Length: 350
Image: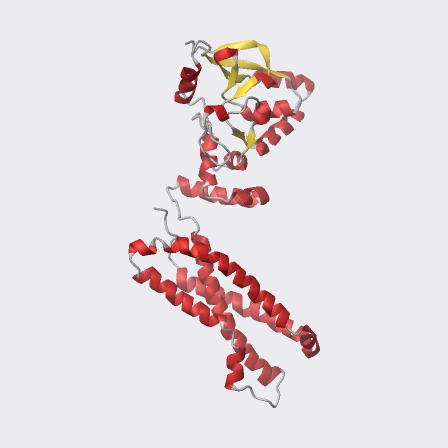
């Protein structure tokens, strides 16, 4: 087995290069395509001369690409026919099984798909044009350029970071709001550098808790506003009876209180083996929560008499709502957040 470096002066067709990974970040490919277009004709030849593609010669004389997959794909997409190669090792004499064993053992192989699952070497594409997109690989590349981590000589470092991010950031967020995903990735990278690994979803649980108490307060505040409206802003001779107050009272407040008490009991008084099953049960119940949430606001819209609201002066109502929300409710939410969570650090992942 010959492992000396052999610069090849003969160009190799890009279409003949065999990838040793399944995915690339197509965002990274686009950046390299843009850089290639900026090269002038004289610089283009010099660029190709400085960027020889490292390959392994394998059974059948095939050139197996072990680095610069993004560059090779970018050049292929730009219509470049051939590149110069740098032979890292000549393994043509090995049998197929032994060849793939050596490739894997020497970290010249990365057979992971766009979901981070390890596959067989038979799943590797036969050409760079068939490389699949992994948006987390694009995110990892952008994270490195933003200073999230340093470029290393360890093989497939960016793919390791891509897998790290894949487990913590939703793919839909990367595809729909890349800038936001990058900000989140920078925070994760900083925490990782400091040895901090917060529990996934902790901020969602925190904001949900605050939202519950804000909604409880809104129910109480709505009652107070109703009293002020009927007695001071638009007073009438009729006085509300206790039964009417109960009829108009938002019953979901009682549901919030009861649910909070049940949740507190489960958190403090439930045995460990039962408590471990609560998150899964809550995930199943979340489907019904969404359905009832939609039905609630649909019912509000159906039962609301907008003509009467307009006749009564909807402008006043809007003004009161605006003042209440931005002058009072938001600050109460901040106060609740401070009272509950001041000085508390997010839970660490086990």
